[in-house]
Length: 400
Ligand SMILES: C[S@@+](CC[C@H](N)C(=O)[O-])C[C@H]1O[C@@H](n2cnc3c(N)ncnc32)[C@H](O)[C@@H]1O
Image (cartoon, rainbow, N blue to C red; front, top):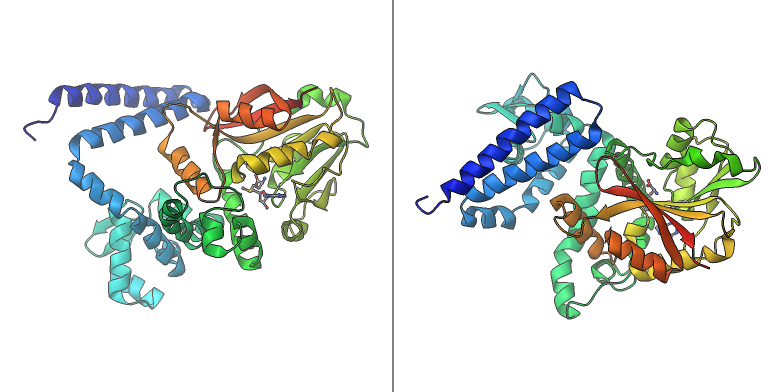
């Protein structure tokens, strides 16, 4: 404590207080200004982290880092025990939870200790627990599937990654040679696709993104261009469109969206999409995005959160697969994905990029997007950034 830089702490305190004042004022007087509110939330979180870095002894931070995976594990076991549904806001005692779960008292206690220490569940008194906004959100099936998917499918690959990198001399991973292939024998999508239950859980986990900012419908001005769409033409092809959530929401937002829409996916995902009761205006088509695009002359070839699952080599192959289908001066590629900061990347985005790295995929900065599109034969026309979060819609055209 003697060496602590009090001057810096005071400076951080003043900046933190000013940001909180600004946040409260903006949220109460200008609540629709989502962009400014998100900016302030990010500053406050960063300032709190800097204060924490000033106060928490470095050794404690190293211990926290060493055991960070325990939170994911505790949440995963809590899901198996259905704890989040069993803990009400009004509170519940440990004995009742033990009775309701049928698990050993020690197991329930230790899992709850981790969850209360992480402020996921509130500790009202000794052995009495209450729901928090986080634990309430963990009663949503899709969010539970997200925890299951990260724990069951991703974390084993995370654990295997350092040894894989040592073995390969720290070379970049590709879609066919990466920590996942080393562990499961096949790339991630194939590993997931061979077990329909895992695939369904993965697709369900992806649905959580509908609840995250920015909203599912990109802040791209589609309606600017409705005039040049012939009624029987294909307006938009959603390549790697999952179960069709983006198309469903696009039609909700633009009921007069003219022309036809096509959802392209791996065959097993198309089978899932058939059960999603999508509009009859959406054609479902099994298609591998790296094979030549069969729908010619569409206005938009849209890829939402697909490119970040690919290394550059696959991304370039998918871009080249579009060349033959492109109507020059009319068709456009729209890529909705993270456009991460070159400097000051948020921890969540860095973490997403690490998850992508072990699958041979990547999140990209603006410079990296320009490069991969250029290699695929395209050039960026504009990037329409969301008010909230790092997602952008990259609009690109085929180069002559
Ligand atoms: C992260 S998910 C995003 C799904 C959807 N676009 C969304 O935003 O909800 C990536 C999707 O890309 C699909 N995908 C990956 N590689 C593909 C390929 N070569 N051909 C077709 N689909 C592919 C996967 O099946 C998966 O559904």
